Image 1 (cartoon, rainbow, N blue to C red):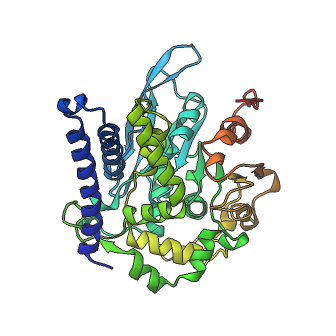
Image 2: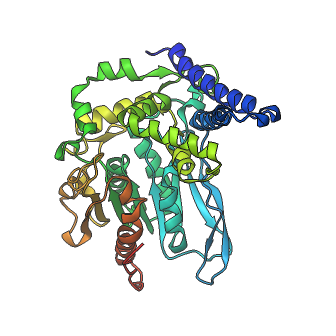
Length: 423
């Protein structure tokens, strides 16, 4: 499938459906049809509106939408997004809060490169901003990166994190969510050996596949069933002529989205039809629950083929990080080199993406880290999304993470953050 034709065929199908939706909405919205009592006219306009938005949002990067926060003085403080480090495949961005002195806590939130944009962690970032200076890894859509920019695989991802951490300095506390957890651990071990003064003070690793074999999920089962040859043949395509990255081999976001949707096809189909009825009745709004969720869920990005394939082969199949044999730029990355970075593991009891045990395996690799520098938390009843953005994060996990950071900040302890009792 390594052809531009297959990539462009998917984009043509998406574009056609967006056009059909726009046409239906426009045609059924003519004033002359207002005289008709036929409900089909209203339903056609509603179907067109929902369809146009559904297929249009698939190629649009969502906005962070964090305009301001309330400071301890009770005043609103505007938030600006600044580029701290710019690189071809991803930037380090800062959420700069105007009229606020530098905070005692400085955090780097490492976001996944797994088909969705970094904005998927918008709730996490927004909840941390009042209490910390927050930096985020903002990965770029591979379709927009010219072939001349070169490759980007798991080793490059690690080296990007190394550069970001060197820029931020040693007083940084890192929170890694899901897919980048093992690579963040590798980046810290790399720094421990090559540049110890640039190591962060703490790592909070949340729901990531450090050892995929520690607990089976559908994701790990798929990784075992499919061969690398099959995966390369089925999943990899070349970016079409429409984008700057024309000719680049990628794992297309639209292909991954089709897989996501097929796993819960009945649920998504019902959500679509229910939204059509709400629009027809005048009960929907631009930022209602349906649109808030699907504006993010349907916005997908392409990954470079080498990153996708090397992640599957090296992290999942060969378990190089779990076996402590991972290499970067020809150098072995020894997890035992981490001796002073505090590490906290957070897992969700009902996580069906990275099941409990997969992330906890990181602590076994830290053979030279004192036990008092290790911590773990299993959140009862929490799924994958809940541990970093849902109710569990808001009420329990966030305060625990902030307390862990303060306990390992090397500065006078703050008053502990209290756990909330209710929503």
